[in-house]
Image (tube, rainbow, N blue to C red):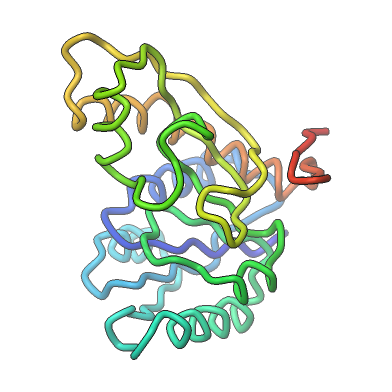
Length: 207
């Protein structure tokens, strides 16, 4: 049974999707053992406590710079014996020291079909606003491994979602979460825990 540590910053809807999937038996050979937040008031911490999952807060504002914050995060991940780290709406940037220490053991869900609308500055509603401004007819979500390049790690799963004519960024965000993110994130976590994901030259193969 692998130890899953989830990093959060906000409301924790993707964390809730993982908790629900775990409770229904959809995540095989893995268990969420800790939730770590970079914000003291993140509602995701409440979701974790309601599910009897241990929590800790390593607030970005408590550290002088990004490097020191990352060192604290790395120490927490190692002490928690993390086998898989899931970024579920985690807004702080993990530096190369962290991504190298957990190479191909950190996954993130991004609300677009990478390589579209991704990279530095593309997060939250900004992604959906950009998609609508571009006039795309299909968007979606991507679960990928995390490396030192923003949204640059190997893609694990993707799922497409149709864009509707009257969509606002908020409406599109909700549809992408409900139809794609909450589906493929738990699936990717289970595939990892079952040892079914192989990575070579930044490309994954699902076995």
